[in-house]
Length: 182
Image 1 (cartoon, rainbow, N blue to C red):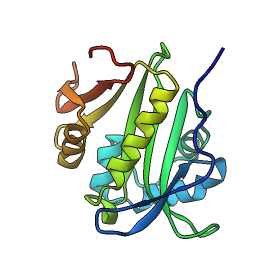
Image 2: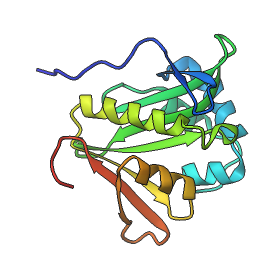
Image 3: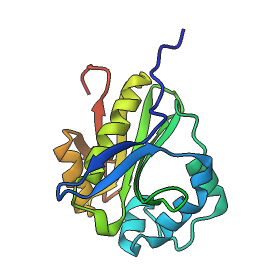
Image 4: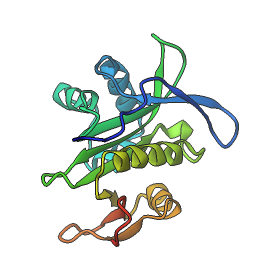
């Protein structure tokens, strides 16, 4: 019997540290154009920090994969501003189960103009809670060691960090979700 908690269906209002409001909600397939615009609007540095390779325009297959989640093995939460149909994505937190299905890999990306205002922290906490509710044992993310903001966020969120074997300059940020030891 699966007793996993369902993700939020509606948006939840949140506020940045400086008082700007935004909403957090699950991603939907109809967010494809918004997701594409969000990725394209990121600075080259932010895009590289997120995908760990250079990319200008995200391929259609990537957008399809990012916007079609099953809300159990894959999940994404958006931070959005504006009202439908003119919403704009300002941040995304997501996870995907690993091959064994016990752990999941996460990523958080925030639009350049919204970084350092608490959006990433709120998204990360929300995606971690959803992953915990889905009974994942551990959550981890690969972070470029040069990505100071993400390294600071990981530390702030209490994640442990270690070098990624065979990948110089890449750290694994991780934590248990099930209460066990790392």
